[in-house]
Length: 273
Image (tube, rainbow, N blue to C red):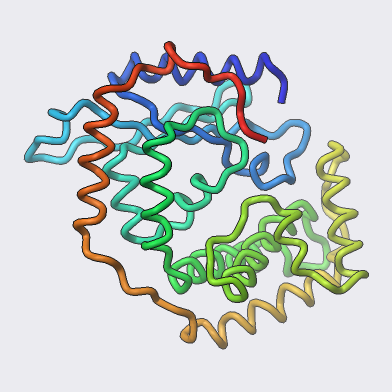
């Protein structure tokens, strides 16, 4: 990633802290760049978790717990308040788990991340995640890939959730973000070749318009959606721990954040790749 891109993102995160009077604890890349099938014109989907000062949490009526900006010049910024993130942890929200597993990290408060990583191991629900990814795969497959001519780049938005489901089924853990890691589960050489052809084409910036559907990929998708639908009730629903774990994490992270500096006083320009 180019240094000027990283610096642009870093400066925006610093501006967000000042504009909203928050401390950003964690900021990563999400979406196609984190998944490893970005196009040359893909947006930068910057996602972050932030914390307010302690008194902000002492209120009767709920306050807005999301910070969002419209996409501008290929940059898309969106973040969740810490309490919202922990609420979604309780629901085993797959999007939160994806943020925590992103390999493109713009900033990470180590204390915050250590607590969140430990909580994620306690709250991950295979059944909840399978439902999420299977719903995504079925929706995209039905909408984009059922006709004779299809928009071939949409294959990635069906293959990825299907492969994520298979990963959860075999390993009982949150799936990795990189698409190529998920592809290691495919042992059919012809199928793997066709998928890799599409991947190289998409990443090279070649126009991916309407083309004839790829039967071998469609068959793989249909077979595995049927398999997952037939077996979904056999997946582990995972009993949740007592909510005291989350509340304890909330208090510890808020108290820690009061002792930390804002991003402008930290080295923010070396994302992990």
